[in-house]
Length: 113
Length: 116
Image 1 (tube, one colour):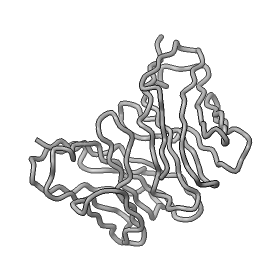
Image 2 (image 1 turned 90 degrees about the vertical axis):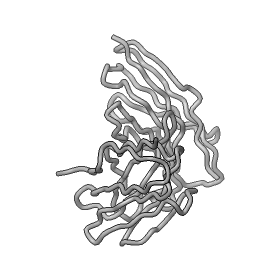
Image 3 (image 1 turned 30 degrees about the horizontal axis):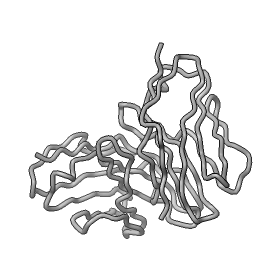
Image 4 (image 1 turned 90 degrees about the horizontal axis):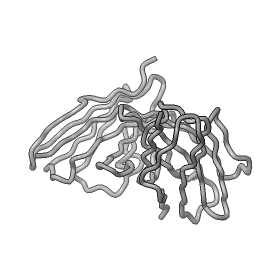
């Protein structure tokens, strides 16, 4: 039973570029959440997708956008990259309903030069 | 807004000994969940233990247990018989029971080193 998978593992971009990160949820899960973890910090909630809609969003600018596909996989897009976007981006999946535990992937390390 | 505070940036413990990691939180909600996550160098966030706020009994998972003090808004993690594999970052996290499942709020973490 595959867990949450994220790609790529590591990515290097330059300021102003755009990036797309991908996440496949754990089998049987229908909800995907994205978090940004800056170096030495705890993860911060970006947004959550369910039924291909953004259900909730954290305090992140519109440069951060996402998508969920019919197979429940998800993408995180970041436009006009800033140096401060350098971080580990974590994807977590779960089932909807009264609290279901979130399962995290290994993350994508994004470095901005 | 809810906040989670971990006041110990780093801790170390000898193998086989017991260590306690501290966490305090601030919320005006009455129903919520609290969690401890472990993040080893492999980066994957692993759920260690969870506590529902309406339960007075402290949660226990094998060598891991919590001391949940709702009135004091304190949620500490005790690791007994520490093992080398326990070396990792530990994050305390909060989830509002009535809110979306996505909005986990994390503390800044405590780096735990288990020494042989």
